Length: 178
Picture (cartoon, rainbow, N blue to C red):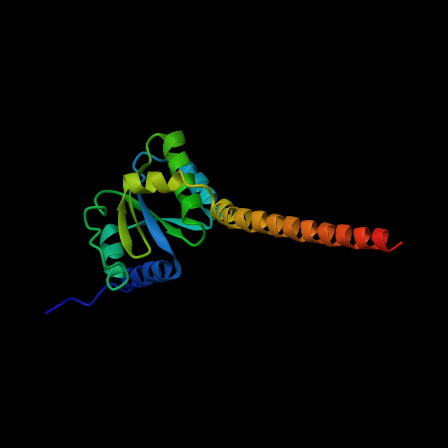
């Protein structure tokens, strides 16, 4: 016979499930060695990149992730785990965490689940090197705009040359007729 689940733990599992459902993905970290003020500062940095940084119990996270995360993350959920639940730009959050790893020296990135796919810590570091989303969009738009601008310039040149030719013919005919 199975024991009735603890209502407090059931509520925590439901809360983690809500965070997972509302997020674009998660980045797992090992926060061992961080003190309360460092974790508080890290949470502030995460909020600026539109993410929530939460310390979770591994067993409760496993229960909450059932049916939401299809990949097995059991090996990531070893030891103390804090999770960044991503709501904004994934690259910005990865960069903020990467900066915190460099600054604090005790925080480590364990891995991530983004878009339903599992990534290792190295992939998260590569994601952190990407420029922000707005810059990437601007680069794509700029890349698309350059050929269009060149085409417009070429068409304007052809049209201008045609107008000058027609004007020259009209001037020549009016000079011959006078």
